[in-house]
Image 1 (tube, one colour):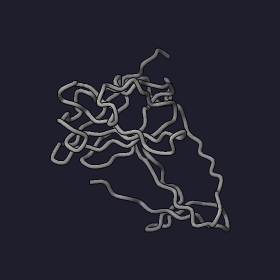
Image 2 (cartoon, one colour):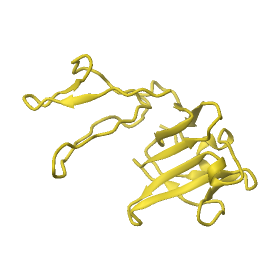
Image 3 (cartoon, helix red, strand yellow):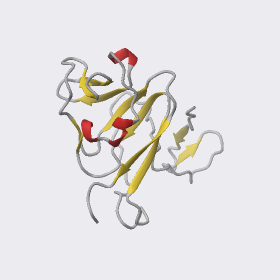
Length: 168
């Protein structure tokens, strides 16, 4: 089961501190997601820095692995390019059922529609299908987009392994 670590930002020096330990040196692992809760009455600007997967920071490996647990998982494609939902490697591990409510699901935010587009793994089609059209989707996960993956109740967790889709 997933656990949460809570942090707060100290205004005197701008450091993020672990709410339990007071540490300011914690790091996030590659597969970690996080939430930001804004306590202000207005929008705030955040700047994130990190590394794109490349030959040096991946140690020459060509595969990225993220764990998908039962329930909701916040995910993203590990490499800096768009990929069709139908080409994500977990299609063979996804649980396909007969409807949205009996299958593994993907939900990604569409800023133009201001709502989530929803897909489910159809056993009959052996594909990810759009909830509205019930046909295999041509939609893609864009660069730097996150998405929700809901692992169907009762299905075991699995490791999502994506091979790097380009050469160094």
